[in-house]
Length: 185
Image 1: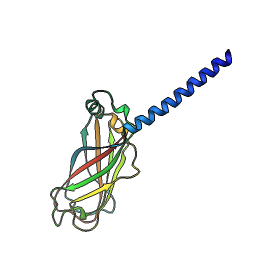
Image 2: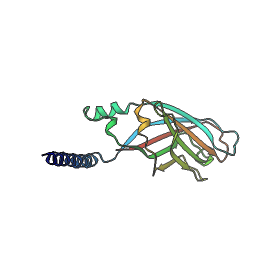
Image 3: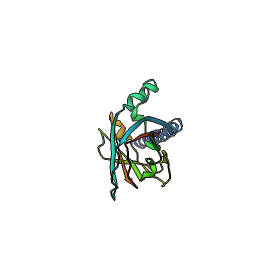
Image 4: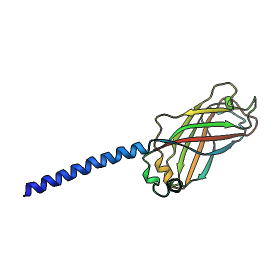
């Protein structure tokens, strides 16, 4: 009798384990990664009168977001942030809206964008750019092997920081507009 109870208990645990695995497989099929475009944000980079040897901060901006409420609103309240397993940057695009022949992305060797939030103050690099020394007002950085950013989105304020290395001076402030596409799963 005691062996029968132990066998039934083990059989029930095995059933639950296989059911949980099947439920996870179903969830993974239903919730394959989707692309989400985050509202664009703008940095105004002041004129750079001298070129320094290293990287410099080009600006920062904070934006408010409540991803949990957005997910709930778009799923009839069924799912929220806790239903997600990862949030990663898929692509980032930088545009200079007031570029000209003397002031454009060619003035910079490289740039990077980092993210922090009111729930995770550690800055995480989310995109890097290398710019050729030819005129350009736009650059796209497709991201691979990015860190998971889900802990940054559990709060309601995101902080973006733009860093860059200048190749030559700029003679006017440049308006950088940054667009981000997230892969959400």
